[in-house]
Image 1: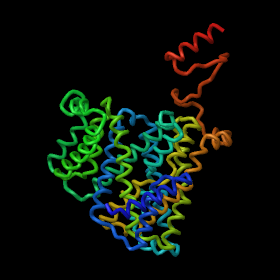
Image 2: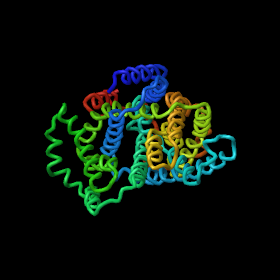
Image 3: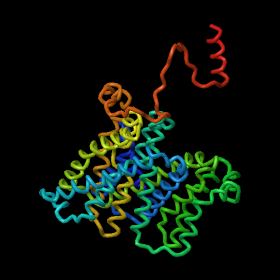
Image 4: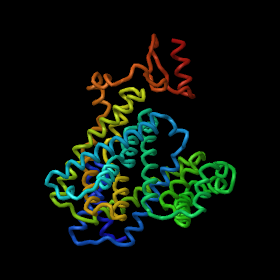
Length: 411
C-alpha cells in the first residue's frame, strides 16, 4: 500500500477520534482528501478492501449462534424494522423526485427502494465500539442490539448473493448443507486444528485462511464469496474458542476495512448537491431510531432496554455502502450515490456519538416519557430487579463475594 494512504488514513482517523468520533469517519474524509490531490484508486487497495469485507463477515459468523436469533424480539423485530424502513424511506425518496434535486429525478421505483434498503442497516462497527466503550456488551440491550445487527447482516449477505448474477451449480447445495452438520466442527479435523493452533500467530493465520477458503469454495460453485466467509464463521460459532478467534481478528478486520472506506472516498468528491442530499438523509435518521424503539417495546421489552438498543442502532451503516457498491456494480444506481451514502453515514455518526455516550443520563432525564410506550406485560427476563427489605447486595459469589456475604451476615 502506498505510504501516502496510510499517512492520510492515520492522520484523519486520529483527528476525528480526539473529538469522540469513530476513526472510520476519518478514513472516509482521508479518501476524499486524497481524491482532491489527484490520487486514484488502485487494484491493490481494492483487493485489501474486499478482504476487509470478508473478515467482517467471518467475524460476524463466529458470533452467529442460530438459537440466539430465534427470539421474536430479535429476528421478527429486526425484519419488521427493515421492511417498514425500506418501504417508508423508499416512498419518501420517490416524493423527493418532485423537488429540484437532479439525483432524484430519474430514480425508478426499484432504485428508490434499493437506496432505502441501504439506509435501513445499522452500523455494526459503530454499535460494537459504543457497547464496548460503555461496558454494555453483556447487558440485555447490548445482546438485543448485537442480535439485530446479525439479522441485518444476514439480509445483506442474501442481497449480495442475489445481486452477483451468478448461477449456482449443483454443488452449491452441498456447501450450504454444512450449516446443518455442526458435529463436523465439534469432533473432527477443523476442531482439532483450532484446538491446537495456540494463541499466537498460528491462530491469526487460521483466522485469515478460513474466510479465504470459504470465499474461494463458494465462488467455485457460483455463490457469492462473502457468503462463504460468513458460513465458515458460523460453522465455528459453537466452538469454545470462537470468541477468542473473533477477538483476535477484530483488529485485523478494522485495519483492512480502513482500505474499504478509503476506496469509497477515492470514488468521487461530494458536490454541494450531494452533500445537501446526504444531510437530508441524515435528518431522516431519528425516524428510523424512533421506529425501532416502538417496535421493540411492542415485543414486550422494557422502555429502557428498547431506548438504549435504539440509540446504539440509530445511525446508518457501512453495510449500506457495501450494498450501494453492489448496486453500482450491477448498474442500478450511479457511483455518486456511494458518496452520498458515505457522507450521510459520517453525519449520522457525528449526530449519534454524543447521544450514545450520554445514553444513561438521557434516559434517566426523560424516563417518564419513555415509560409511556411500555406494554403492560413484559418479557420475564427483562423485568427490572425489585428489592424488598435487603440492605446489602453482593454481586458474584466467588471467593471475595462469599467472604463479604459471610461477614455481612454475621453483622
